[in-house]
Figure: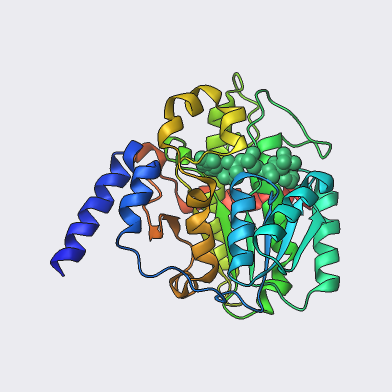
Length: 320
Ligand SMILES: NC(=O)c1ccc[n+]([C@@H]2O[C@H](COP(=O)([O-])OP(=O)(O)OC[C@H]3O[C@@H](n4cnc5c(N)ncnc54)[C@H](OP(=O)(O)O)[C@@H]3O)[C@@H](O)[C@H]2O)c1
């Protein structure tokens, strides 16, 4: 009891002070009081689809899921690069069932084609991890005419979730996980300008705004899929050493280098959400290091139900 109160206090302190909590320090401290690791075989017989699984956190998630016994579908836009990631995972988990599926999240035709192929082939899907992410330096539009970060982080995942809904519903205890970012805490839901037409384009702000949208979208999908017993969660990985961080944020990566988490540590909560009972008993939560976290610390980031409903409508119209 007393020990529980102490760990709660330390955990909250780590969360609020950001640098220790988001870095490998937070992971190492919290790791000491977590229950035993997920056991090998925890995902035996389950199929898990992970977007952007050829690099960084996605690859680490795929590796861990395969290690827990899951059949893994790597949903990636570059099948050649992804095949070498697949081979790497197979060397670490010999005999794992891993398939690369072509899927560019920013291209709705590609998302629909990938989902149709999965529906043709699979009887059910245990989990879908929306991990693919990018931070283009300038405002870019996709062939579908949408701003690239919104297309990749919000519209692609929205479309894919809808397209795979029947497969998720066919499995028991299935889950959807959005890999968001702690950066979203600094941004509010801007449904008045979802594609950054107003003002100068700020890459980190645009990235963080779409990560905020992901958290709200996860809550909306949680309601949509509740009847089908599909749990939907968002999480943030803290700060992990991945190509995404070193390429898009080189200065940040240099400054934080020694304390960045490994990709496996960053992916830990996403993997845990795939297998833990706690993730199936709840839905619509925002997690970090295996605990639900508040979605707002700053009063100006709070949104009302009307703004959330408008986000849903925007996603529906933009993916029609
Ligand atoms: N690392 C961190 O500290 C951190 C912190 C907060 C949040 N995150 C989130 O974690 C997720 C993974 O990031 P990461 O750090 O592992 O970066 P990463 O190594 O750059 O991986 C990003 C992955 O997303 C894929 N991707 C990007 N655009 C795509 C598209 N249109 N269609 C399909 N796949 C696409 C990339 O594929 P290609 O190889 O083909 O480019 C790559 O596999 C992202 O959502 C990111 O926002 C990471």
